Length: 295
View 1: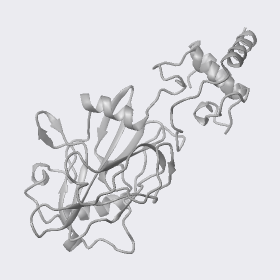
View 2: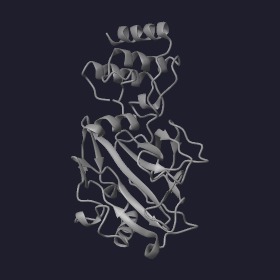
View 3: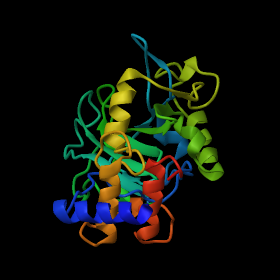
View 4: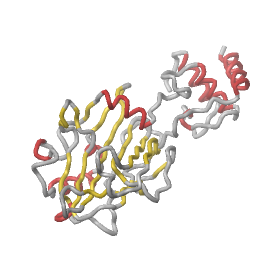
């Protein structure tokens, strides 16, 4: 029975030739959460005593029933520092911005989302991207420069910098914003705790409204998140190459095309994890459609 089904799949691929997937590559190939590193400019290290103006925690009430999606750092006496990728991943959303002077203003600034594996993404908002050769679909490695800290002018004669960072992901078909602090390595957590404790302003930006450093809320979902997170993270259902929300016969045809070398190989179809797309992957997706296997 399976042999006849495979012949049918190949025949359909030969008719349609290609059915390319719009999804960006999954990198690294994992469904586990990332371990993030807070990397700072080694040639111009932070002076915790003077450079940390304020800290904005995750999950505080912004009014109108909205919770803050990011953790933010407001710098004093410095800006335009490079921002380094906290983990490996694929750029799934990239909004360029060239102007340091206004990138921190509401509705302005650049933005980058980096998907880690299958279920998580990290993002920076209000960044400056001048001089960077980045585009959606690019693979970045931990420590790569992905943007620059924006200028920030909270009052006359004050010049500082501003950056905000978020972690998002999906669980069982639902989308969430997570408290970023929880995803950092122990070494980075120690540094972030020092940054939090050295905040010069402790009665603003939500700092005095939380008990735990960087926020009391662990995660939350929202209507806006249900729209933003899957779009900017390019989250897709494993095996859903035609993006119709399910794995079906057309997706199996697509994998057959990869096996026949009529469709560009996509390692997200490497269901048996052997580093290539072969008949075993085709068999697995067919069995998945028949309810006899999981991808």
